[in-house]
Amino acid sequence: MAIDVSTLDQVAHVDHLLSQNQREINRLNFELTRTNRAEEVSDERDESRQAGITTAQSRVDALAAQLGLLAEGTPEHNTKSLGLGAAQANLAVL
Image (tube, rainbow, N blue to C red; front, side, top):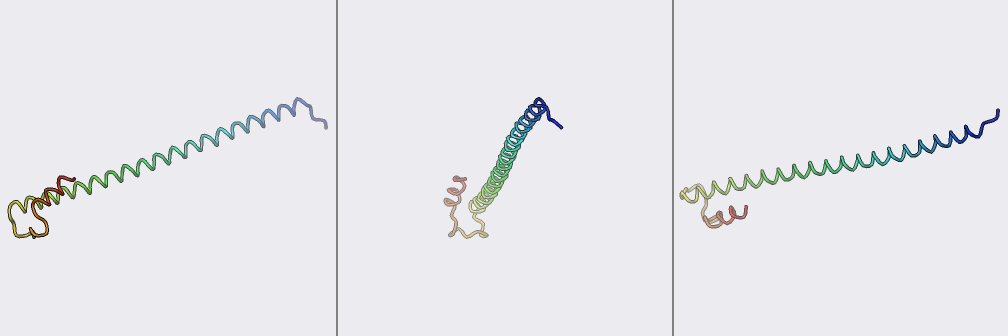
């Protein structure tokens, strides 16, 4: 059985096209993976920022409460360990 040269050329051409398509698929998979990772990192950063904001807000609320109690002179707080000025300075930092 003899194989026609044009058939071999067609097979080689199809093989070449398949190789090109496979390279393109690999490139697109790489880009997709990179994009997905970037989105995951972005989501993690957003979650981290939100956690930081929540923590800072909690500190602000706690310091504001301390300021209010210290300003009222309530005995529940030890004013020697945290004076009104120190609480105001901490609140200003946030």
